Image (cartoon, rainbow, N blue to C red; front, side, top):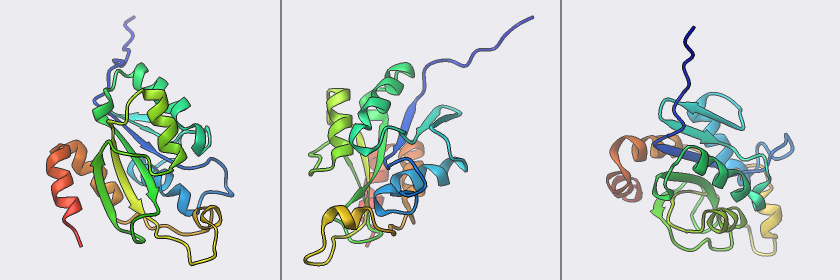
Length: 175
């Protein structure tokens, strides 16, 4: 009898940031979870489809690195092939931007991932959620219902299929 074991190496790790639990499912902070669910057509902690591992960390946002770093090591995915999809206050609702590395801009999920990976040099798909109205707290805003994921799954696919530079060029040029 022969057993087949899938190789431990994967070419890409796609991470959707969010918080676990039904109370967070439709919040702005969970756009990353929703993007990965659209890409995989399933709700799973992590799954592998072909050469890509998809992950929605069940650690809560502030400890996302505790899930991401071990998966990156397990599947030997280098930082520049990790795609993190996250909510972005500094972009209007629904606007997408793609970048490699950079500052975390106060995003605790990104801070955790950078700390655990030991680098900021991973790909970010920034999904705009806009800013709250004057006087409304940021915490209430990000944990409020909303956040469009339109175009974000296609952005992830473009990065994987076309490469980062080409995908970044056409995604960031969109109005």
